[in-house]
Image 1: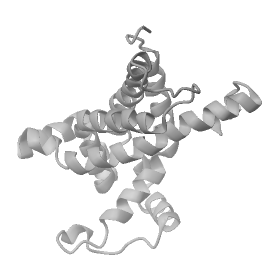
Image 2: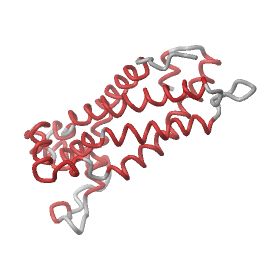
Image 3: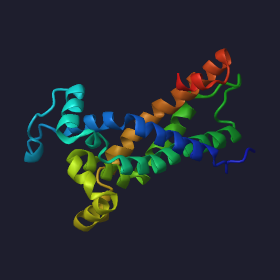
Image 4: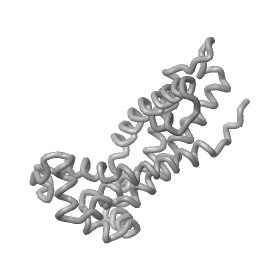
Length: 211
């Protein structure tokens, strides 16, 4: 039986998630702003300020400064340090358990797609549920932009806890976990499948992992 107490997937998965977050966070900020604009229930976000992602990117940069595109980056990094670490680590740990029990591979030695998807679904849901408070912080700071980013991560956390309690930190955990489960169920097995075939064709190179 292989040793399931292998921390490398947790460490490498967390580091990769954090690096990716720094590179893609401005896109996530524009997405969040576009999603919350035009509300009828919240007057502060009732105006349609942005026509699309590019327009949002330009207007946020000009009106609030480039720094506003990174409002909420630290809770996002904290989220990836927990969510990304747990997701990748749990996924590959579950795959090891499935391998040891003879569930992952068929008679020809190929990995079972449905078993992979099941491991990924569980990993995505568990990690997202645990990391939900960091996701709440990230979205709050993204929505309010520059003013909230000046407040800081700790103060924002404290304000949510004081005014909304522990439940406020886990607001939306159900849909968030469901979304993460679906994303992981597609993302991780497809990555493993593509990586396997690319390595068979081109060898184990960094370029193949990016592809």
